[in-house]
Image (tube, rainbow, N blue to C red; front, side, top):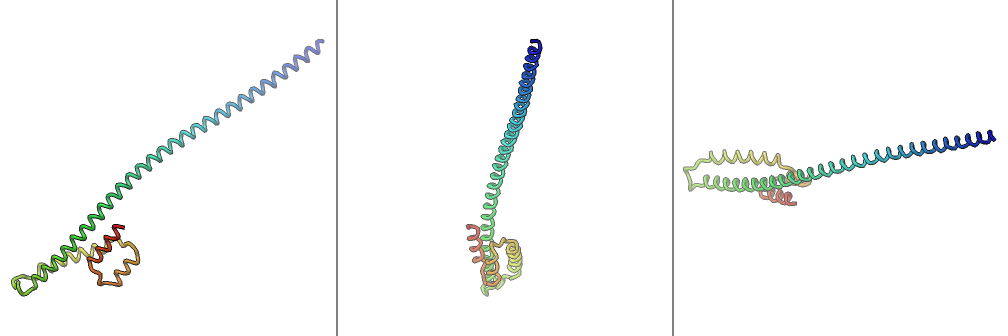
Length: 163
């Protein structure tokens, strides 16, 4: 009877130890799962912050892009206006040169209009050198056809700007 009671207590003790080990193992597994959940939540929060920062950056870049495009449009309009004014000035000065060289005005000298035309031709040369070429085909057409007038060039440029 004494051995059976000792065996019974020993069996109970072994079962309690096994149950305690299972509880410890379950607690460790639960703790590991909670830690992984915290890591996952932290990662989710960081991704949300990054996404918000990227949305803000996209918004800022979009605003800057729109401002730049507005500025370019204004500059293109100013270029067209300047080209038109230059063309009108050239036409006016060529008319003045013809009027000064006519026999009706013997007292006029040709020195002043030539000097102005020289400055304007310099301006035209600088403008033509710095003008953006829309495509290769158009630039080769201009080189092969030197009879293109300033008016034709301006109308081509205006059409290019409008497209």
